[in-house]
Length: 194
Image 1 (cartoon, one colour):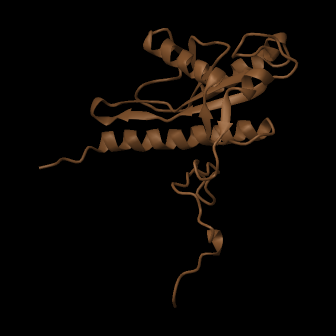
Image 2 (cartoon, helix red, strand yellow):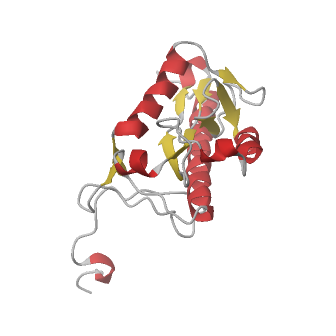
């Protein structure tokens, strides 16, 4: 006989809601920077930053801010310029505001050089929930800035046939992904025979 685990189900639901919130955060920060969220192939400096996040986490060097708990999943931010910290969204935004307008705001997080313009980047790591252990984490948004040479060699936007449409869902307030690209019929698709 299977028993219904209400607490485990609630934790998974919270992790999904946190993922939706994290993706909405990415869309908003991209909009404020004059960009948009796209699915890309990652290499170069982006891969190095993702690897740094992973190594800090596996090595036990990530210090979570006091607002993050394993029992309440929420969006968390990892800022490349403070790689040993994992922050809740408000603390992560405060870290970004701290360097805004300073010379450090012009430092490339890929090569470490000061640049005349830094291109903001974000990577989304979905939430993880283990209902049997009553723990969940994330989602995590990795935030960084790259100089033009690092940005140019780090990503290749995927073609429409390779990627998913990451636009926010309409009407639900959550973020959705399209599992298959639209066919040539697109939105004009009818309801069939009537």
